[in-house]
Amino acid sequence: MLFSLLVTTSVVLLLLNSAPQSDAFKFSKASVIVPQLSRNTHANHILSKAPAVSVSQSSYKQQQFNFDFDLKSTAASSDAAPEESKKTDFSARTTARKTAKKLLPLGAMLFFILFNYTILRDTKDVLVVTAPGSGAEIIPFLKTYVNLPSAIGFTVAYSSLCNKYSADKVFYMIMTAFLTFFGAFAGIIYPNRMFLHPNVTADWLATIAPAFFLPLISIFRNWTYALFYTLANMWGSVVVSLLFWGFANDITTVDEAKKYYPLFGLMANVALIFSGQYVKFVSNQRTGLALGADAWGYSLKMLMGAVMAGGVVIMGLMAFMQSQVLTDPACVDQNKEKARKKSKTKMTISESAKFLSSSPYIKDLATLVIGYGMAINIVEVTWKAKLKAAFPDPNSYSVFMGNFSSTTGVVTLIMMLAGRFIFKRFGWGVAAQITPITLLTTGIGFFSLTMFPGFFAPITAKLGTTPLMLAVLIGAAQNILSKGAKYSLFDPCKEMAYIPLDQESKTKGKAAIDVIGNPLGKSGGSFLQQVLIGATGSLSASTPYLGGILGVIIVAWIRAANSLNKQFIVKQREMEGSDWPLEKFKKKEQ
Image 1 (cartoon, rainbow, N blue to C red):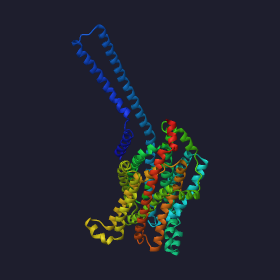
Image 2 (image 1 turned 60 degrees about the vertical axis):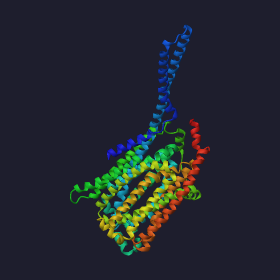
Image 3 (image 1 turned 60 degrees about the horizontal axis):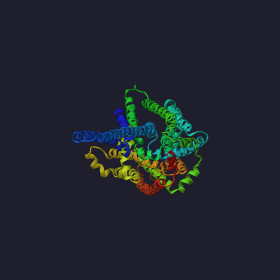
Image 4 (image 1 turned 45 degrees about the horizontal axis):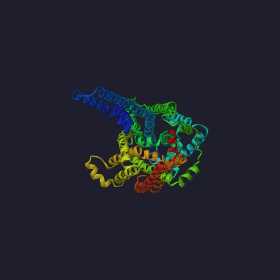
């Protein structure tokens, strides 16, 4: 794993220093050689002709003067050329160092943010799916009745904090709150879960309530797990989408984003490999515990300890960025940085919804985000139901999820390297469609195995497995490829789409999508599953309908991507041809 990190770092540094040299730089290197060659050739030519020519004293002096003048002039040009070459070379190296100074800490921040998110994501699934009286069926109810209200409540609190404090202080406050809860959960809440969970009341409610309310009763029974699930899920939308990408978009120029956003997560997605292996390592440590010890409680402390350590590193990197990068005029324009620190967002939920529906560009961008949220929610819940059937034990479930995360990291790393080529060769439009097409093609295989296990039984028997295990593996491949496409292509596409917008639209559009679009997609998919579970009686019975709905969602997603691509091209041309704010900034620099 350490070798993988070193290789990744080397690749990033190589790419940062592989910018094409200017024509002036290429010419200056040639001018060092050519004048010196001319000087030696000219001298040899005169010396070889001298004995055979009879010249007068004056003509000889004139020739000698011309010869000396030619030598001096060529020498001067040969001396000046290396100086120009050195200046150009020094400027190129300085630019590369300044770029690395800004982008490498950002990549490291994303590394540890995703490291934490992967651990939290795997842990929240284990807690909720394997809890007493629970299962994958409660996830849609959690996302609709717990996650969405919590996201709205957080948005209100976040808006209040942004009105009172600077963006940097809000960052530290939110990070501290997250880390405090996760540390308290492992050290205080989980050890006292039997006292905190109302099992007796939940058992009584289960005997009198209709079947539709059983998932809600399960959430009530395991309310501490539900709280952990909600905050772990919010880490992805709040810390990754809102805090990190919002900060990165503010301090990254358009040219840097086009070059490095596809590679931005290159180092960060090694975190998926590291975190997956760490989860697997922690799971293996349980075997050495004494008989009767709380193995999962021990693992939880180790997992949350790693999350807290990663959080401290993230805040340390943020402090470095503030003190060493944001104050450096060569890295960040100081006028833009002052405006960033003073900027405040006061848009309410109703204003966000109104703005979202009034702009076709923002509406298409929101469709991408909502479509991904709904599609991945339908896919994940159906797959996790099969996963629980294949691995009912929490330990074996956790080991599988650790391998799943490591494989996701490897695949994402490969797709991240390919992402830059895809953007350069095929453009934004093709890159934006790879994720939905991946979900569609793999979804056909997964839902076919789920709906027609008897048909595939002879085939799986020849392969030495069962339709259930093959469905689990294909579902895992679907999730791995879709997550890899998300990190390497979907996220860069989404963030690049904000670049051609003016500052006001960029700020309001991102706030509207982060506040409404992301939770709406997840809760929308969950709500559809709730309705189908209530109508059919179980998640497995609703699977055929979920497969058809998934196809409709992906088709709408692809259409929105095509529409947004056309608008994106127009916005880019307007940005290049008009007096766009960034052009004003460039003119001031010149």
